[in-house]
Image (tube, rainbow, N blue to C red; front, top):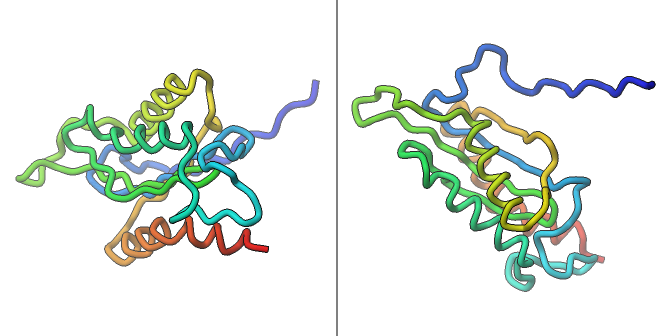
Length: 160
């Protein structure tokens, strides 16, 4: 039997993922199936003209409620693309700067993925997800802009 290649570990070694900070998260659908936008095609322009599909609306709702169970977790920005989602996940400390008992980034993202799949009625996500620890305000601002402009850039790159 042929051994499958091992997944590359993209986590920062010895990084405390539940520590206060912001994280750029990208989660893709299984097989990059385009299920989140209606009418995905060469002339699609999602930002104004193409509504989210029913599955896309479920994914959006799942992202918006991601932080609900956790008092110190916030979703600052997100976008739903045809076959993936991006969001900024922020884990906060208390008002005195002390760490609050927090879930890991993997726990929060995994919870969102499970909720969306249950609502859809089948698993729709790739096994893992991409995360990037946002290191400073410039990094945060660049990621915010990327998330803000990603749907329009996708539409421009798909135009005939």
